[in-house]
Image (cartoon, rainbow, N blue to C red; front, side):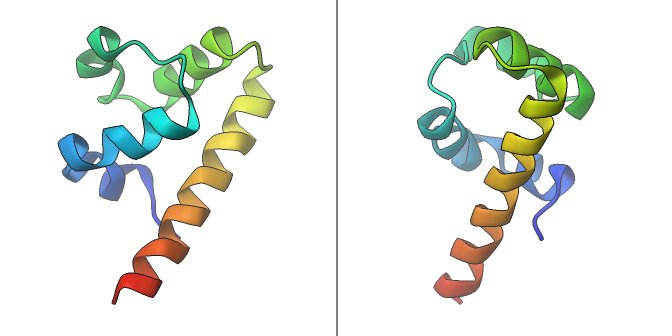
Length: 74
């Protein structure tokens, strides 16, 4: 499964897919949030009216789907 480090290694390419899944993200906040997964998940919860646990689960699902997409591309 894709992890946070893999996602942020190429943030410029990854962020549009993250934004498609979580449309209420503010582009301006990302330079600071991409440095810390916990802060990102808390921000995700706040901006998408989710609990912190729901945000973590939604983000884990997103990473899983991204992993599947990457496997299909290879």
